[in-house]
Image (cartoon, rainbow, N blue to C red; front, top):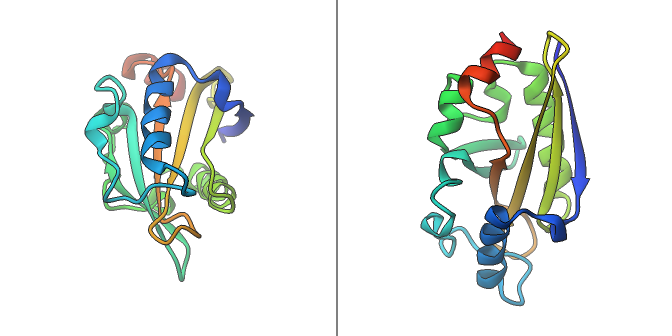
Length: 164
């Protein structure tokens, strides 16, 4: 079994390429708690990050997180395109439960989060990447969509060497 740990990092420590995406989100947010999905233009995300970007719709009754957009690099890295599926549909059900819980925690507060995600493969090798999550809100009281951008990732061959 693989384990996962999310460590909160300060938004003020964002690397420049993620800071660009955050600043765009912050600008369109204005004085509200979050921008709406129609306001969010994915073409404003730096082109190098777009393939590592996910957009999730937050569904209620029951709570689910459905991938509206799943970047091409992620689809290649994980050998699966999750577009239109939920995190509960992930092949690794343990990972799906951990992601679901982390998204529940994220949606409890309407604020951006920056994480370092530590993973240990079944071979014991540590995998680390950083993740920026940005909330979107249609009603300005709940998170209705989530923009997630993964950075400091590894290439597909290295990833499969330690996870297969």
